[in-house]
Length: 278
Image 1: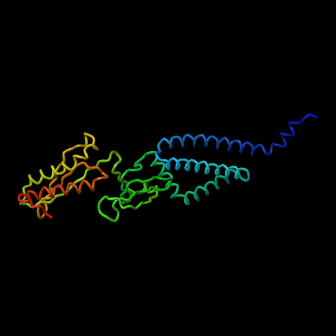
Image 2: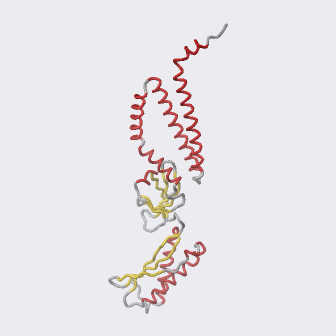
């Protein structure tokens, strides 16, 4: 018995359009998967920690899921409606999702910028939204800081962890202490009376800084080992002497305390020519 292919084709003709749509959607999904693989590889080259690697995988999985949902919506709408209705529904969905997921989407985009551009990385000391701390972790949605200072003056670790949304990078200023290296310009202030010997005071202060900083110079490059420099300012009761020097960002409190103690002890030895304003 001969098979009449023309009859089979006629019977299948109403379904050809949906078959073509399914094939197109499958091809589109395969192409998107291939693109997502390349995106994932590029992002994995930028990350440094296991948690960031997990974030990359979660991000790519989320993209694949969203794209698959869109394909399903396109298939259903095309089968039961027309392209005009599809465009209208897609527009409504875009507006609704954009409104509902504005913060999460901004957070994911912020995380991508942090991974790719690296304005700061884990371990950097930063100020974000007037909060000072060391970057502990960067996840898909949040930045975690080990707070510095907080309820106390200075830059001692407070023991608290601050959680900030990654979207904060779009509307807050960020100061990175250690983007280039671990060194910053710091200063110690000393006030003396007008009756004091200014030159002797300057020598004591500069030599005190050199003595305290000498053990730290092994951490410095040769270009950063510079002479401390003095800046003077008249005050009502005397002269304010500011000595500025290159310091280690994470040890600045310890270093300034040691320098202040050294200056005080040396001035006390020669207090006949230098009167320190307490």
